[in-house]
Length: 465
Image 1 (cartoon, rainbow, N blue to C red):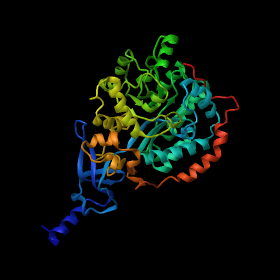
Image 2: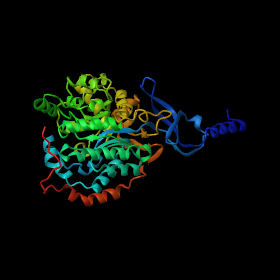
Image 3: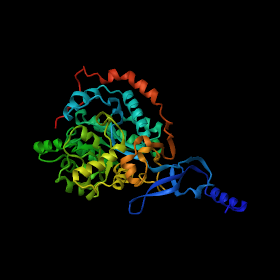
Image 4: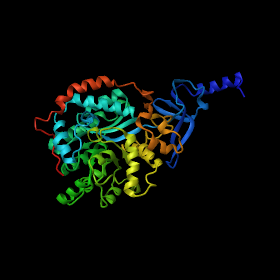
């Protein structure tokens, strides 16, 4: 029945009483989490955003007359929480493809660490800008970065509109100045970019940062209420070498130096062994692990992140890419699919990981891994409006028998049509709105000869595990 003029007026009055929304997305399917944190999907739904926050997830009909500053008709698309890259080195996109087909030690010592001795703040800025463009186009709304000259990365994040968890990396070979610089950065930029930047202390790893520096970092973390983001037990060789030299695993080094008494994000963990599991389970702080499976395959590491064992301990495992120098890509969609497939292979169980479990890793678990579990990771009232719209009408995603499986195993990063952070549209219909990619590529290209020169014979560090 067609509504009468009086009924239409009443509907309009009800919509106006709720106030003008900043953004309303209508007609989409929405990925949601229930009170048991299970993945579900609501069809013909609408998302209302005000002041950078999801105000409601409702029906398209319920907001037909709601006034909004901007509306998106998302029919044929799926709305899901923005992906989170839980461990990367964004500026290393400038080194993409530079060190190929090498064992880990040669990769570091012969190429990457010599080249990084050339880095300038401008190189870092341009690399970060290009990386953010790649991530926005791939549906990544937040990334955890661990690198050098991080003031430049923070400035790029503030300008381009992404969310980021940033840490200034340091080695013990830098002396106390490295640790102090990491602290100063974390305090200076904490809650920056209107709250979109969170920070961490960022010692590189137990094999490049000595016990005294790790213990000092743990004390600073507790004193200033800061988390720690570092590499540990990256591969089995590191664990075996640590046991042979020191009688303890890298995870046990984190325990004895107090790092596990803080909130800590551990990158990779493919060298985590059975004796490490109770250590991680009994950690006093919030512990999480970031897994970047593509790089492990490229380096031919014999093990991968023990996702199932960590899951059984209640330790969140977030999805990551690592830097593009090792991974060649900042594609978290690929990390999600590879995580699911590799876990099936390594456990010998096709029922693990399921597509819904993989989506949980990509959303809520990744948010928790970077300390943002109370702000992002789901589309629900009160959460920050970090979300993406995915086009599922392509031939490679049709027909849809299982929506979760379609997202994990069929959809690609290029299917992301729109990326939104804090309610701000950073990409709409595949058009980037906050980064000029041709300008960045042109300027970076002019700087590459000086950046990749290794004739000086220097390196910023030695890899010896």
